[in-house]
Image (cartoon, rainbow, N blue to C red):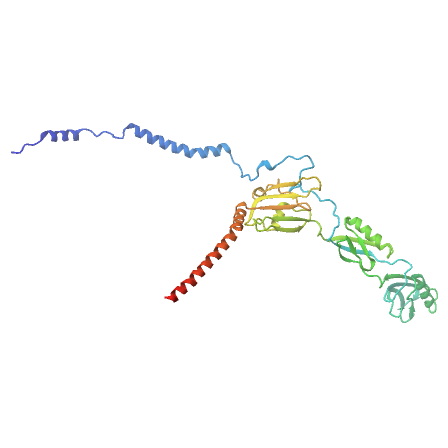
Length: 379
């Protein structure tokens, strides 16, 4: 007869009949709610910061570069450009010279192939004399079939008038003759471009040289007219700059240890830093954004004039504070990337050792190869 263990069964039924309690407890529910509220608060923080800060544009320009300057001493820049001083001619500028009046000094002797203007009153009705006449090679002018030719070569204007009058008196009763020199064949034209030589002069061919270096256009005009007055009667000249070659600025790009690149750019008076950078197609792969203008200072003062440039402010923010106006003689220096420069320096230092070790290794390999060939032949 089997005896049952009633105690164990009764215990199990009693435990099953009890209500199941919440093992998590109230503490875990509180912690879950706290984490949920914390996440919501973290999401609201950026929104609150945006509301408090308001809308603000990206500022690429640090105010530290805005250095106060006395009135009238601030360097010119974009939106505050200034006119350059009056241009002074220097080598190797090219001048365009035009002579408005080319009349030889009196008394002028008429030569062959000169052109004279002859006007005569009281002529035959069907044979007027009022035109330009070329002095032929034999020294005569042809007044027409009714009057014939008159020799006037070697005569002055007054002598030519008397000679023509005497000729016409053979046909006309009271001729009134007027002769003017229209073009002198012996006078070489002056109009044209002239290069200012290294000695500061321009060569006017048969009229000699005139010193124009260091002069303004007005001063050069007076100097040319004063010089030509020794050959011509009251000369009138007009000059202009055909090519601005003497006033330049320089763009220097550091080459990260591989040599600097220097570009010489003629100046027109309206360039800024951004214009200068466009001349070299912007920054290269070797360049950094560390840029400045080195402005020449008078000798003997022992000082440097350096204007720092904020590249990001000029290009990305269109800030004009450091977009300075370029002046003649300025050096726009673009510094190199220091990491690339360091790599280049290290390569220069270890390069010879690498080549030497490579040559040594190649030599050793060749020797071992020769020895191995000899060993194989021996066996």
